[in-house]
Image 1 (cartoon, rainbow, N blue to C red):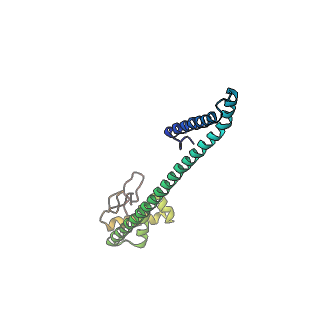
Image 2 (image 1 turned 90 degrees about the vertical axis):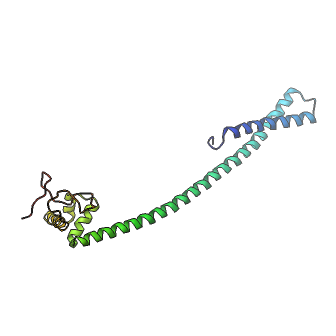
Image 3 (image 1 turned 90 degrees about the horizontal axis):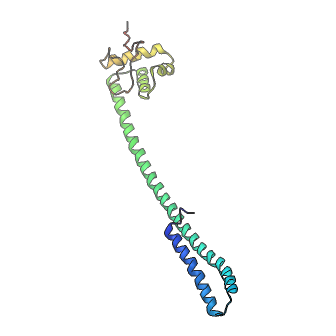
Length: 183
């Protein structure tokens, strides 16, 4: 509760308690000016819970109001984040569509077969040579497709190069990392 009640509110609450007790004691002394100190103390004890409860209810309303304001702010922030997320998804979808179209155009320029396209797309997704060999079910099929892709783009002897825009190697290499020659 301390996070919802700042020091200024606490000071006002303390002042309200003191003023409320003072007001009740003052009224009691106006009604019966000849009260003995023991009777005055007993009146103070009977008045204090009423004053504390009244101030507590006011504090509770204040805390509830602050909590509601924070809740509304969170709802507004969530709405802003939702709108930004939708805009980002829309923008990224259009960018990905453009990237897909660019990839297809480049594949068409190189006249890649369906199998070569599959290997190239797996490379784009970040699969390693070993993973591609497992996915394509045949390591021997992977090397010729890789070599064929390089030959179609005019790069038969460039190991670990890409089809112009791949981030991983599209070459089948030996243990030293050099391109294996066909034939």
